[in-house]
Amino acid sequence: MKHFRFFSALLACVTLFGLLAACAPAAPAGAGKKVVIAMDATFPPMELVDQSKNMVGLDPDLIMAIAKDQGFQVELKNTAWDGIFAGLEGGAYDGILSSVSITDDRKKTYDFSDPYLYSGQAIIVRTNETAIKSKADLNGKKVGAQLGTTGADEVAKIPGVTAKNYDTIDLAMLDLSNSQVDAVIVDYPVASNYALVSPQFKGKLQIIGDRFTNEPYGLTVQKGDPKKLLALFNKGLKDLHANGTYDQIYAKWIGGKPPAAPAQ
Image (cartoon, rainbow, N blue to C red):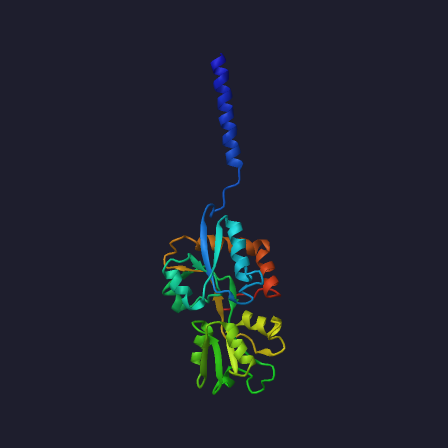
């Protein structure tokens, strides 16, 4: 009888532990994973270095929020744009989250997440500029862009333009303000930041018109996604949209509401 009571008690304990385990919340999908993400922190408000030498901006906030949601750890690595894709191919980091536009050409070499922001190229000129009112007016002008970006690609498509490429976009803006180039083509959020927010350039620069391209940004990884990051990123991004965190991050760094996906 004593043995029966002992085994009955043991069975009850095992059953109780099983029920507790079943009721416990499941571990996040990325639990225990650590990833290294590269950014070129010279592209405000998307990614920049603050006075304390920390990487801040929409992209750092976004990846940290997704990592928290999905349970993985992130190390950010500030990397110059001219070598950022080569570093990914060489395995120096696991992904790039640095305002990378998803293009058909880049899809041949890399895999991308779902779009996390819809951007596009904008034209920025000096506030005293009267001759340039649209892209058509750039014929015969000297136009700056950051080397290796879709902005530089767009400059190359414009007939009659003298292109000047820069390692970082701030150097292009400096030359523009000093009348060394007539215009700069750059992603719209960055154009807005320099023209409307930057203490150095506010009041000196203006945006002409609206975006003239539609370019979704995505997390960039090696072909085949060897670290299995895309599913984590996409799920986290979906959760952030659902709980309002994404809108808060967007409003903090860009203001207003995020643009909707362009009509196909």
